[in-house]
Amino acid sequence: MLESAGISTLCMSSALDISRAVNPPRTAFLDFPLGHTAGKPGDPALQREIMLEALEAFTSLTEPGSIKMLPFRWSEDNSWQETAMRERDERLPRLDTPQYQSEEDRRLAEGTCATCHPGSVEER
Amino acid sequence: MPVEYISRIRDLYLSLGYGTYKWTVNETPPPWRPLRKPLARCRLALLASGGIYCAGQEAFHYKDDTSFRAIPSDADIADLRATHFAYDLTDARRDPNVVFPLGTLRGLAQEGAIGALAGRAYSFMGGIYSARRVTEELAPALRDAVVREEADAALLVPV
Image (tube, rainbow over all chains, first blue to last red; front, side, top):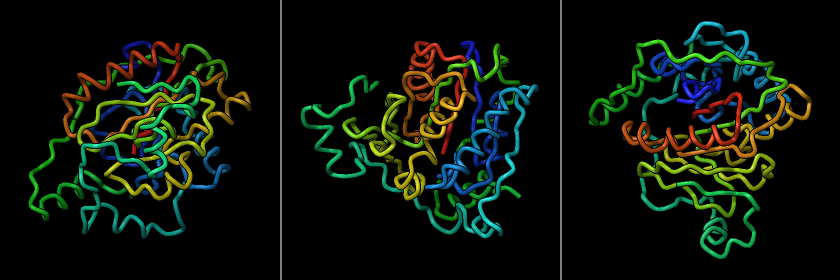
């Protein structure tokens, strides 16, 4: 929808087969475990490297639906891949009330918004 | 070899007695808009499905929540929170940049690799089981928001 509206888009991805099925205009694929689409926690240097490689796809990909494979490995071996999405359904219950990261967040959101960052907007 | 998530999810759901999930498969070529100027002169918008909100904003719920949050692009990473039912939140909560690379993008804008960031970055909770509601409710609203930002380009970060 964005591309049709005149905005060039790039999707990062850590699920190659899903990206192939969805077929967005441009994809930058990072072979990391789910939940790490843009890098490793606390490693801004690596996050920057990953992002530079990913953003390069805006110009290097010239065929709609192309996928750039980013040259990074999560670890020396690929043992994390053995158990990904296998054995157990690890999803949480689909509760229909706001699921705050902490009780303090709930108090901040539900009380007066004195600490809301000016310009932070909640869209529905 | 990258993990084959579609077949693993199919097998996992089958083994648990769930029905088969109907994956979206787009066979027609996607739309295509080349960048009209170098990235170093572009305004870039970030959109992420990892369920990021800012402290003070209402958190997402987990039952087809089609809302999104607009997060100021100068937000303190320490004020960002993550909530989602379908991925391990440990590292996203430790360092939101791994699913919402706002700090990373800010750094690259400061370096001059990106022209500028859009005034707001956007996040939603991507575990929405109704593809229809995504197409009819969430996607058009996000598109309108990003168009209002006057972004030249958008980076989509799924989980």
